Image (cartoon, rainbow, N blue to C red; front, side, top):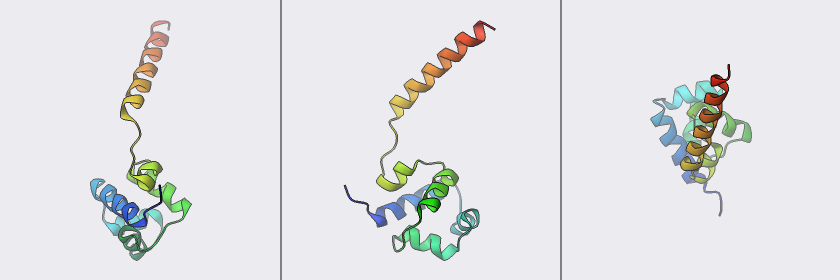
Length: 95
């Protein structure tokens, strides 16, 4: 599997739009120029690891999703969440 910068940019753009943000708003949050965001979204410019991590947090998506397009396994996450809820319920009963 190879990194595809254009597809990465498309995922950034889709995630930004889903979050209801403009390029300018995202740029302000990232502390970069709006044109840099535009170039990232078009796949014309790469971003640093620091920006990648910030993008992930701001857009509330995983870095894996931005880089590869693969989402985390929802069923595994659901199982883990239910397990934690069960454990917390047992702790609460013993209080």
